[in-house]
Length: 162
Image (cartoon, rainbow, N blue to C red; front, side):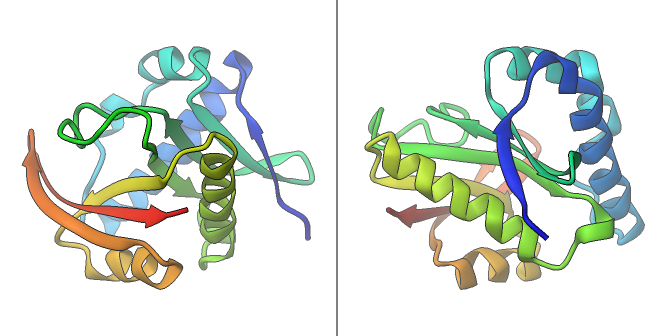
């Protein structure tokens, strides 16, 4: 079945919130909470959606995954040169299609978009204490850059050279 990826619109705020909350609840059930449900509410997602930062993966007109794609990331990568990279955050896939195929499609899309924008790297961060997630990114081709404390999160920073 074909997966298409598109820019979200303000009409998609609720479904973005739903997908992120579904992922958050699943992680809580596993005992590895990540995002609080409070921070995933539509009102807090709306500004990033209106700014064109959320992208959706769809199959048969149903949203199956979301990701926030940014051109800068001063919070997690403040010491990196501007305009050399893009950044992906909050990649979440509905549990009904989990298994790696959809997340890989989203990452391939992000790599292609990074290339089209003339940037050298796609960068991301993840919880440093999640070895299975880190292995997913490493198998895809991301290189571990460093670890750091950012607010309440201790994260591993990764980059993919385009």
